[in-house]
Image (cartoon, rainbow, N blue to C red; front, side):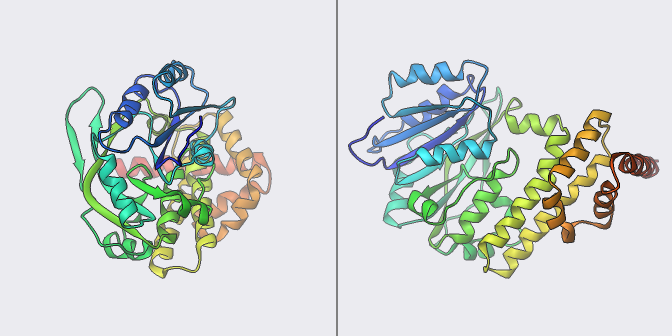
Length: 349
């Protein structure tokens, strides 16, 4: 795909088994009224097994600015977004999920603000749409703010509520700002957007929020995120505890020095995430998954060692027992699992 001019904005859309929604998502972009014809849309097909790829190929016959990156191996969500980011040529970046839509006739307004106010990041509100329902629930997290530094934005408007700023699709980023600070998504399926969103805000110098609703988020029970939450397994547990917690700690190390209050809140989030590892004692995992958990911990022993100071006593003891071998740890696991079940029974009686 070639352009005579640099696109004003690049839409980056990871796609996995989104054939029910991708046409509507793309229509919401291409049906925008106004003067924003100079944009590109980059769809990253992450090994979909449905008709997603063919729908995009068909729409390419209509839209010359629609690009398809077809991956040969399944990637983490964070990785697919990085692939799209590497391909993007736009002055601004908007990460959009394939089952969502942007609001009608909103693009000109948002880009006008980004340009005229020379923003690193513009944040806006969104609607929530349930599957098979026309009802909309409005999120009103933002009121219109002055232009401030990112850390000031967090402390002034979201003090103690950093988790409310963990979404990447309700903001538009200046591409030069992303590249200047080498902002990347971690190679995760869970929490990858939180790391990017927090890192960008911490380093931004010109941030503004507006009350305008610019996006509609679909609660999709078939989405990757929903399925990961509904059917937990050992890989998910390990990722959302150890790997996500480690990504937060790395963010702190890479971004220092910055505001102490934000550091403390990031540490709080990291500690909570890391110690979710103890949930292994409360779920009915199969023997195969228990063994897999042990091997995951062994394979990431250097990460676990670096996180020792953030573990609770129980988590630290569990990791230490692994040093004596699988069968010693298995006996410890069964003992702790029995204690957890007994405690749960006592609480419910």
